[in-house]
Length: 283
Image 1 (cartoon, one colour):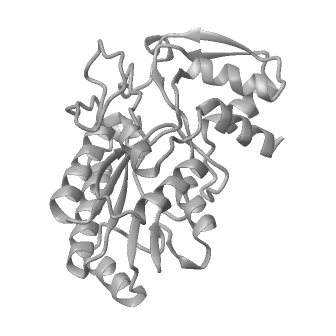
Image 2 (cartoon, helix red, strand yellow; image 1 turned 90 degrees about the horizontal axis):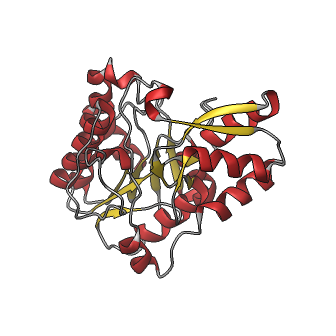
């Protein structure tokens, strides 16, 4: 089996390539522009993949407010083209989406299920939701996985994830101001990649929520990072308003992964355990 990985140089794409080994057909952004229908069709004809996993995304959440056209081109038009190409050659498409398709329900305090109506707040979330809709409409054999707060070691883009950023800053500063009024579930790319590969083999097409178990605020997450790394850095909780990000963020975007857990026969491990493995491997 040959599985095309788009966004192969990112954290999740790199993890998938590592786990799949010789069965992976990696495509970086430079190698394949997923918004070019002719190039996508030519790549499929040349490589003849048996499935496609789309990890490519415009994920600069704040910049998307000013560059909404670029965000929609990558996050909506690209998946639309991929879905049509996959449908034409009769292969499944795995598309990675985000918890940011939710967020308008300010009073939310229970995890979102796949059947809950979405309500994105910013341009990034709207572009990702549009991408989901194009995938559902264009490819009958699709998996859409919404996830959150990814961190992993396989990326080649040079960008730091939240954990690596906290470890770097924690070694430089005695205290850090971290947002405490956003709750979600940071997720290990290793755990997610394993789940994607297993899910792909089931043929149980549809939309899934896929995160590590449990939830936390970013301040709680940072506190646990420093505890595991044995850093004395003090976390000072602040509000989203105090942080002053350009794009709106969901105050609560915890995802209910029960549907995926039933299909796989087990949940992804708790976020604390996944984080402990990650920090231990890098220390």
